[in-house]
Image 1: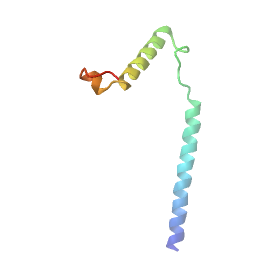
Image 2: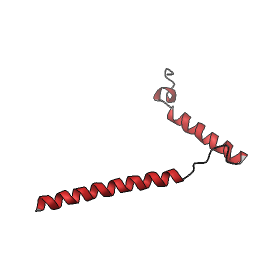
Image 3: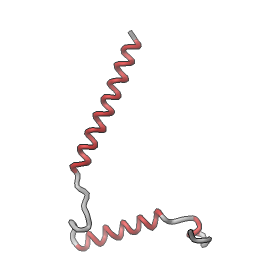
Image 4: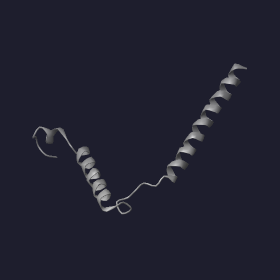
Length: 71
């Protein structure tokens, strides 16, 4: 009997997990991400600057920080 209750609890947990994933995907699909074209000129420029800063931060290496050999 305990085995059946554990199995039912596990199935319920997996069902809730899958339902949450489906709901999250559905809600994420409804939210529009702004693009540089949809924003005003100043906002678009700021967005591009932030994206460039993030790209540079991701490419920052120890060699560049300490003046070593560039990759």
